[in-house]
Length: 433
Image (cartoon, one colour):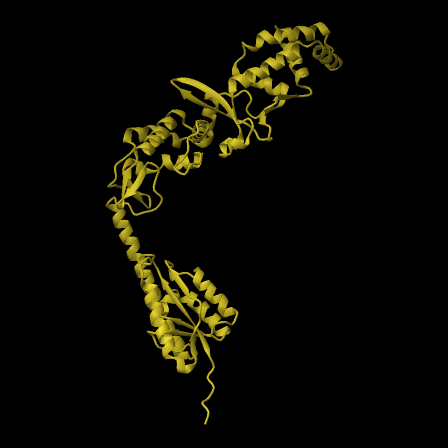
C-alpha cells in the first residue's frame, strides 16, 4: 500500500530584536531565534514542512510598529503566494501591538497562511486559538508600554542628575565615555557667536557676516539664522541638562558663563521685526533691492568689523546658499560699487544729450525753461554729498530701476520718469527758497 501524498508547506522564519546591542556578535539573539525555529521546522518534516530559503531578520526594530524592512519583504512574499507558514520564536517577535497584529492575521487569513509560535502552542484557525492569541498579545502590548515607561522614567532621572543621554552633540563638545567634554577650537566659535550676537542683535546679519568670512559648521556648511538661534538658545552651553523644559545642573563643563548668556539673551525679547528695523538703521545699504548678479538673483548687503573698522559688502545669493564658486561675482565691496553707480549718474547728468532730452520732457509737462533744467542738474552734484544717507537712498531709488553686476562690468537701468521727477522736485525747492 502506497503512502499518502503530503503537500509541501513553505515555512518562512521571522526574527526580530528591539535593540542593536549585541548584533555584531558571531552568534546573537536573531541567530538563536532562527536556530530554534529551523529546528522546529525540521521536526515537522513528516507534515511536509520545508524551510523557505530567504531570511527575514529585523535587528534594532521595535515591535510596536509595522515599519520594518524584513517584515515588509515577508508580507510581499506572502501576497505573491510564496509562503505557506510563518514561524516565529514568540508572538511578540512578530508584533507587540494588538491592532497591528490584527492586520497581520487578516493578511494571513486572506492568503491562507498559517502562523506558528514554537514556544506558544495555539491554532489561529479556531475561535479558541484566536482568543488565546488576543490574550497573549494584550500582555505583550502591556509589557511594551511598561518597558517604555521605565525607559522614560530612567531618562528623566538621568537628566535630573545632569547626565548626557545621547542625541545630537552640540557644537563645542564631544562625547567621551558617555560624557560631554569641551573641544576648544569649536568652543571658541561658540563664544564668538554669543559675543557677536550680543553686539549685533540679529541672527540674519550674523549669518551673513559669518558667510562672508567663510565660517562653517562642524559639517562644513555655512551658518544660517536657524542654526544660530539653536546655538544661542541651547542651555547646554551654560553647563545645564534640559529635559522637557526643565533645566538641571549638568555634569559637563560650561562653555558660556552666565554674564555672556545674560548679555546676549535679552535680545530675543524684542520681536524679529523690531530687531530687523534696528539692524537696517545701523547698516544702511544704498543699493539694497536694486543690485543683482549675472544669475538674476539679488545681491545681499552685509558687513563685518575688523580691528574696530567697518567693512561693507554685497554678496551673491549663491554664496549664502553655500555655492559661491558657481557665481562669477560672488562678493564686492559696497563702497566701491556704490561710488561707481553715483559717478555714473553724475556723468549722465552732465551729458548735453541727457540735459536736452530731460528739458524736452519736463518742458512739455511742467512748462520749465531750459535754463531752469540746467540749473537744477548743476545744483544736484554738489548737493549730493550734503544729503543724509536716507535721502541719498530715496533719490537713487527714484532714478535707478535695476543694477546688474557681472564680470564684464555694471549695467544700470534707469527709471523712465525718474529724472523728470527729480528735476521737478529740485526746481520746486529752488523756487520755494
